[in-house]
Length: 456
Image 1 (cartoon, one colour):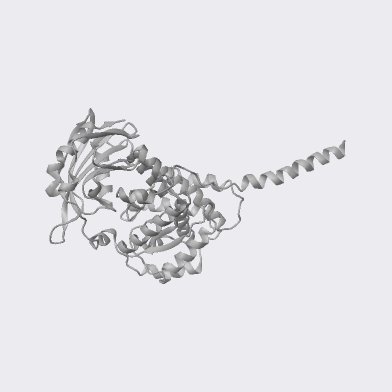
Image 2: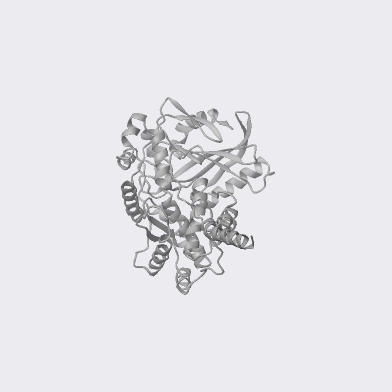
C-alpha cells in the first residue's frame, strides 16, 4: 500500500512537471479578423507606403549610427515575433514629437523624439515591440478591409476579396501613407499590441513592464510631446494591469535586460540633435490640391450609426474610422494624408475631473487641442447651445489650413467646435473644418449634420 502511495505521488509530480511549464509559458496567439489582403499584397502595400514615407518625412539614412542601432535592436525583437515571418525593417524619422508607426508587411518608423524621451533601452524596446505587434496582427490591412467592405457593393466585394484588394484600394483613393487613418489604431488594437509586445519583450530578455511604464510616463508628461503618440495609439485603459497579467503567465526571471553601453552612446548622440517639429515638416510639404468645386456636398444624405451617436452626412463624402473609434467624414479630395482641409471630425474627450462643469470640460478640451495644434486660436466667446435637447458649447476657431494660396503661403482655416456632455461625464465633440474663404458656403451642410446628430 505504501509503495502504491509513493507511486501515485510520483505520477502526480510527473504530470505537473509536464503541465505546469505549458501553463506558465503560454503565449499570445495572433488574432485573426476579416482581411481582404493577401500576404503578397500586404508586403507590396507596405513597400509602396514606405517609399512614400521616405519622400515625405525626414528619415535618417540607413547608414546613420542612430539608424543602425535601431535596426539592430529591432531585428533582435523581431526574431521573437510569432506568426508570419515578415521582412521587418526599421527606420528613424528626424522628428521631435514622440511617435512611432508600423506599415503593413514590416516597415517600422520611430521618431527621433522617442529615442530622446526613453530613459533606458528597455523603454525604447517596448515601443518597437509594440509596433512589431501591429504588423503581426495585420491591424493596418484589417482596418482598411473593414473600410472598403463598408463602401463597396456586395457584387464588387466578392470579386475583390483575395484578388485585387490593393488595386481596389488605390481606385478608392485610400492608402497607408503618412497619417493614414488605417495607421491610427483602435483601443482594441492597442490592447492586442500591448499583450503581444509583452511576450516579444520577455522572449528578447527585456522586462515587459518597461513598455507600459514608458507609455504611462509620456501620457502623464503630456505637453507638446505626448498628444501625437496617443492620437495614433489611444490608451486601451488599465494598460499596466494588462501587461502585468500577461507577465504573470510567463516563467519568472531573476533579471532582465534594461540598458546597454550602445544605448547610452546613442542616447548621448541624440541629445545633441535638434529634430524637426511636425509643423516644420508640414511646411515643407507641397501644397494640397483641392478645389472648392470638388468638395461640395451632394444633395442626398446617408445615415451613420456609431456606438456613441447617430448622424447623417452627404452621400458623396466618405467616412474614415469605424463605429467604435473617432471618425472623420470628408470629401475624398478634402483629405491630404495627414491633414483634413474640408470635413467634420467627431471624437470623445474625458476631462481630468469627471465632475467638471460643461464650461470647464470644454476649455480643458480646447487646451488639449492647442497642444497638438499651437496655431489654433479662439474667435470671440464660446456660446451655450442645445443639440437636440442636450446642453452643449459652441466655439469658433481659426488656424492654419494644409492648403496653400496662390503665392504658396498657408491659407487660413476656420474650425467650428461643438461639444456636448455625455452621461459618463465625457464630452462628445464635433469639429467642422474648411478654409476661411469656403467655410460659409459649407456652413449649411455642417449645421444640417449637427441637427441630425443624436447622442446615445
